Length: 207
Image (cartoon, rainbow, N blue to C red; front, side, top):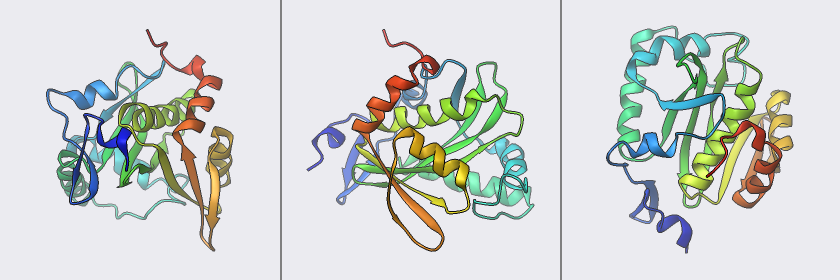
């Protein structure tokens, strides 16, 4: 039983799988708004293909992510296919922006398994402000735990990606397993609520 999750208005249960119900009346924008002080999320659109591809082709940024071809049409096609998953509540892919709409990076919620979610596709521009990393992770956890009702996350990080590994540990994520390629992390809603207090200066104050 997952009482918190399945009573959350943004979720529904279909064939014993959990999906985020497609929010009506622009509710997606409502659940991702007013979280961080300096950045915001918006859903990826097809016209973001060039920006996304530029990040994923950057040799300094793509060492630990799935490879892509230098093909703008293929990227647009991928986004169109993703938008169908978004409509079905299977995943959410975001552009990270400054409050004045400057694109800073990307991040994604996906692989929903019951009360657990995965996040990834986290890439920031070289010149993104230092607070963008902290605030984007705070946002993704806030959306998943506090606004969508998940209870835990499962995340894998390549063993060579020491910076992200250390970043997750700093946030309170725990390594649950590893193999030759990856570390596997778990983060609970309870742990995030504690971590959140340490970084509240980066968040919009709740009324």
